[in-house]
Length: 458
Ligand SMILES: Nc1ncnc2c1ncn2[C@@H]1O[C@H](COP(=O)(O)OP(=O)(O)OP(=O)(O)O)[C@@H](O)[C@H]1O
Image (tube, rainbow, N blue to C red; front, side, top):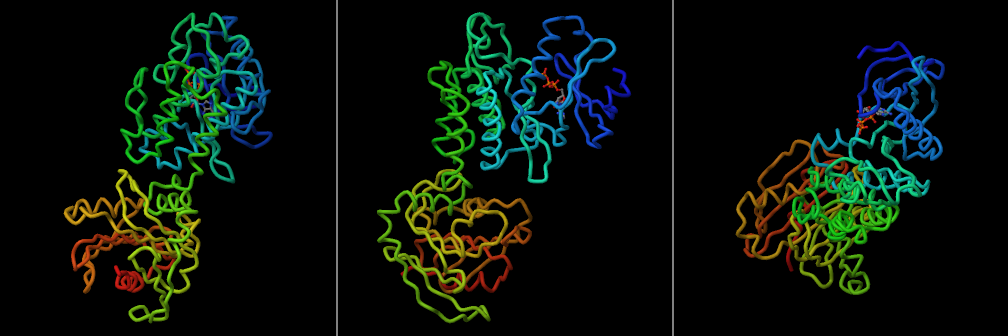
């Protein structure tokens, strides 16, 4: 395919890709000094009137919907050979398909993408349009000064809701399209897009496209530790019978957003789950989380005074620097951690408990949990896997720790914002295994040692 010099005032830079009906070029708008993507009807369809019309219809829908969650259309034109083209912002970060190909996404990142994709589809449904071809390669990513924009694109198969009942030609992409889209006589409605959203969710979370319906393996089976409500929502969106699906993209998106915002979902961490359980049972737990504070000497960590903190009902006592002991949560959650392991008593003491899972590293604090009995028999690999559940993709330094109470290993991620240290320790007296997650913006190994030394079972 020869590279044209320009389309109207848009100077062509390079070929971006070709779909079934069109070719997309990166070009430069010299007048506004900005990169653009120009989509041009492919030559072989020039004289096919219905394809020509559908191409223009895509541009019209995008222009009329004019939404921050959809690719916008800025301009439209016709080439001397009669082929139409339209001009969009250039999505410089590729598509969600590229992201998925790079590896498994963190849960919060996957939920953020799903919320934004769902927003785009919601805009289309409000506009009276069914997309019919939602899939990761049709969701584009663009840099922006305030972060990444997620843009639903490629309305080549879009259909108006009014015109979609009765006979509808089969259209869509296998793996993402609803069963009713595969049948030429099947009438479709917005729930066809809900199925595709479920398929995209399945792939974002597991790295795999769902098999053809009926789907029997929920995403949580392939990625243990997913919130149960998320598994249930995705499986309902993928129901072969559309009556079982959420009613439209808005309902699907609202439910994804609620799952994302639930206190326990920001990260699959022990501490986050502990807090979520703590909040849900706040009324019951109120009496149990009364803390006992007592100043202790700062021996071992010069320049710092320490405070003993413990839940009134529990026997776990943690020593933290005075200035960290501003907020706390305590509770006895069940099913925490990536594999849904059970944890015994837990305690989070930090400068800002709500910001504990933020990745800017501004919080100082300690999360301590006693592992259920049975962990004593786990070998070093089992304990290593536990320490590794604190997500930080950087090098880790490991060192042994031993004093008169505890014996085990301290893991430290020096390049992580907030200097994470995790210790997994067994009590010398026997019987208990302790998990400690310690965060401090300026890493001090002496503080880590002092915290471990001050952690006790009464
Ligand atoms: N605004 C854009 N910015 C950057 N790349 C784009 C933009 N729009 C489309 N592309 C890229 O151009 C290529 C062709 O896109 P197009 O929408 O024509 O077809 P497709 O989605 O690849 O295939 P099909 O239409 O057959 O499903 C894709 O690789 C797509 O990622």
